[in-house]
Each structure stands twice: as structure tokens, then as C-alpha cells.
Amino acid sequence: MTRTEKLLAELIALPSVNPAFLPAGHPSAGEQRVAEFLAATAAQAGLEIEFQEVLPGRSNLIARLRPAQAIRRTILLAPHMDTVGADGTKFIPQRKNGRLHGRGACDTKGSVAAMLAALCDLARAKARPLETEIVFVGLIDEEHAQAGSRALVGQVSSLSPLFGKAGRRAAAGSVLAIVGEPTKLQVVTAHKGSLWLQLATRGQAAHGATPHLGQNAVHEMARVVDVLETSYAAQLRRRQHPLLGAATVNVGQIAGGTQPNIVPDRCVISIDRRTLPGETEAGVRREIKAFLGAKKLKVNLASAKLAPALPLATEVTLPLVQQFLQIGNQTKPVGVDYFCDAAVISAGGIPSVVFGPGDIAQAHTADEWISLAQLERAKDLLVRFFQSLP
Image (cartoon, rainbow, N blue to C red; front, side, top):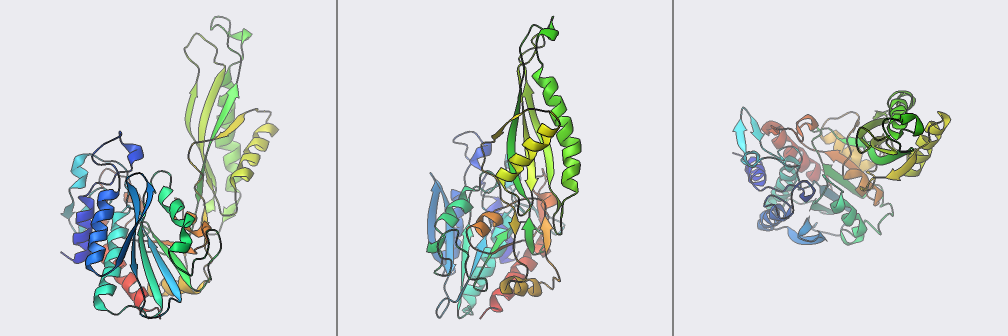
């Protein structure tokens, strides 16, 4: 068993389910066990350790390898430590046919293991880059509200003197964040965002025996759902991004009425609108309202509880992005449909790409697994990238 595989197996065996998916006080909830274990592992390799408290009992872990000379560039490694839920058996790592099975194996404890193992190998070899600082940050809460990455960029200037203040773009050739997600070892420079909205229709209640005396809000909402899933979706398909394709809309929830013999006076749907780089929440809200208004459909729009997940678009020509692409012999970048912490970090001023072992098709599944060969290759590619830096 390699050091990277052993590390991943130990991480799987430490449940770190996002508390949003579990009852309060559940023994599998939270990332703190993983953060403390990673801190001990990193400290043994000689890395500098600190914790950034984000929420009560939940901290980002920061492990730092300083260069031998003055810091002229900084690489940020940023996988997340939380997972979605699973039954207890999924926290027992199982090795079968060149794969390691268990909750978090690819999303994203595989990235955590590959990134920290690469950094520890570099530290132990004493062959660190002369002018490049490498900072590993194990993030909390990616699977729910991205509180970890949002807190990180709020204090970004404390991570490196090259980052500057939050929201201010760092020098293009001096910093890069590599955000860990299962990309099958491809370097991803663009991903979609996600905006959740609630749409409500209003009607007039009446007795079910005399429905003509009321106005049925569910019936009105049925028209809204049909228009969103057909005409509006078709309009979105006509706008294409070169790496991401089209934006999408999905009506995921509907609720209306109280009982069969009452004409419902209110109906609510929740939609997931996947956004492209350049789209904003305000712009999407205006677009939907105008589109439905043109169809003579009246709705009230409200935001869902979660903050919007931002889309990502990182300039491919940045020197560090080009260098990372070349290490993996990748001729062009790719885009992905899902969102992650990369867009939050990028919006905080740090150019970001997404990279990691594993396939997103395995994420959140009942039998999550990762290829061990791909896990080792991820670690090796990162080491080679670090060693290519001055």
C-alpha cells in the first residue's frame, strides 16, 4: 500500500459528513476529526500548521511549505473535507480490483490525499522550490453553503503577501489556486454556477364544490412550469459557452394547496438555474420575470436560502495555468457542469483551476470509489508541477 493510498483509507474511515445533512449532534457530522488528523500528518512532514475557525467546531486547516528564499509565487491547494451522508458501512474503506471504495473516496478525499501527500513528499525531500510557497487548505462546507471558501477569501491577505486584499486580483503570473475535485486528472478552467429561486403564484380560495368562484394558483403555476421547461429552456440552449455549453433550468420542487376540496390560493416552485460566466443573479431574475411577463404569467420571485454558487472562467493563457497543463500533457482546458469552491476563490482575487483524481460520476453515489492508479498519478503530477517551479 502506498503512502497516498494509506492516507486516503484513513480519511475515509474518519466520517466528515456535512452537518446540514444530519441531525444535530450526530457522531458522523463535521470536518474537525479530519482537520486534526491532517494537521498531525502535515506537522510530521515539517509543514507549518494553523486553523481558521469558520463555524463553531468547524475550521479550515492550513498547512504551509515556505520557500528557501523570498516568496515570489504562491500555489494554493484547496480540496474540501466534508462529504454527503452515507450509512455506517460506507466509512469502512474497501480495496477491490485496483479501486478504493468508501464515502468521500473521490469527492474529495482523493484530492485531499493526493495534494497533501505531494506536499509532504516535497517537504521530506528537502527539494522545495526556492521562491514558491505552497499552501494546502482543507476547506469545510463545500457540499452545502461553501462557508469554508467564503471565509478563506475574506481573509485572503493573511495567506500570502502576494494575494493582497479580498476581491483584488493577484498578479497573474505569481499565484494559482488548484481546487480539488474529481476531474479525471484534467485541468478545468470553467464551471457553471447555480442560482436557486422560488417563484410563487397567487389565486383566490373557494370551496371545491364551486371552483368557478375562485382562482386556482396551482393551475396558474402549471402554466409557469410548462413555459420554463419548454420555451425558456429552449431560449437558454441557443446561448452557448465554448467550454460549458448552455445554461439550464430545472423545476425541482412544487407545493400548493391545503386539501382537495379547497381551491388553492398559493403555489410555490423552487428552480435551479445553472449559470454561465458573465451571468449575474440580478440579470437572471430580470430575464425570468420578463420572459414570464411576455407570456402573461404573473409570479413573485424570491431567492432561496443558499447564496448563489458562482460560475468560474479562468484565463487559459496565464503562465501558471499553461505550466500546469503542460505537466499533464493536456493540450487544452475543459469545462464542467457542476460548481465548486474554485469560483469563490477566483472571485476573491486568486486565479483558480479545478483538478483531481476520480470521476464526478462516482460522487454522491451509494458505492463511491476511486482508481488507485489515478490517485497515484495525481500525486505524481502535482509533485512534478511543484518541482518545475523556480
